[in-house]
Length: 455
Image 1 (tube, rainbow, N blue to C red):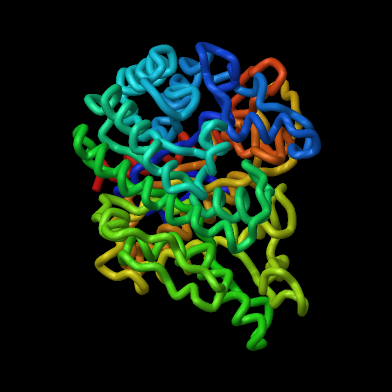
Image 2 (image 1 turned 30 degrees about the vertical axis):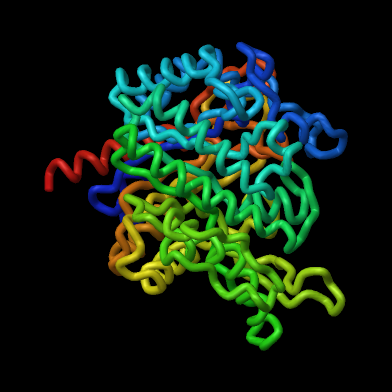
């Protein structure tokens, strides 16, 4: 087992420490206090969409048990907590005035964190699109970015006096590619490359939200994307070309506009983004940080002739994998490679990086009688923190590291079959039991802070 104090892996000095969750995955209380309906309610209510047929209820039930979560965070000693705000708790139909009950919940959460000495670091959008807006086109429609701005105004007015650090949009790549292109996630559409206007509208929503939040006193605002290190399966020209295309649509399509103000060349894909005058200036306005979620490398081969897309993902050779299967390979140096490549590619246009999510699921029991010895998760986290340190040693500025996740939660289309948490959750009773990884992370944070104080 990797020991937080044995220093067999490097830990960057001065790193802030955090843990993360998302509203739909932990809150439960689907019908409470006028909460509206989201695309994920529609998705889980459609037979066959969720692997185990579960509906996220009650799960951790954090809407009613947030005080327990704050106590767990305080016990960890984290600097910050990344959580998300549910759009449909604030605006049940995605339009109109804010709902008092929903806003009050997030005000209580923020106040509780501040009282515990933890900086609240909310995400405005973690996939909780109101169903009414999806019916009007969802992220395919430019109007959704305008509605998002109105939602941001409501949240900013309610919380801006206490919250100074914000994520705007979480993983737009997942919404665009898995939600609208291939249908693996909500809203479950299968538009392939016709889904790509959703990229621009999410980035536009980010730009508008950042502008609004700064008007309410925010001091750090940024977007966070799921990024991956893309490798060709072989040295063949076909596989290298396939890897280039995959890197283009998974990584550069989302990072380039935010960091350079331009989209990469999409002409070979037959795609033209729906850009209006002034959009790119808004999207690329300077950010205080750039958020990177990282889980695994991606190995890509050329697709068979006649396939609808020119690439196919294949297992990364010679590496173990997490409970998500063989495509979720464990290769920590891939994180170092991505971070150092981003620093070279974007230079001084790249602001400080925040690791917004990093973690792993492994098969674990639904019920436990005591702390679970999750050695493989500890090894995964230790090796990836070491990978961040390697990137820092090569000149990449990384200010924060965030474990996904504080709690075992509803893992989207995989339901309750995947467990990422530092804390085990019985999804029937919502009972929380810290795992060995919780104690390991607590000791790591304490030792890192102690070492910093001594230096």
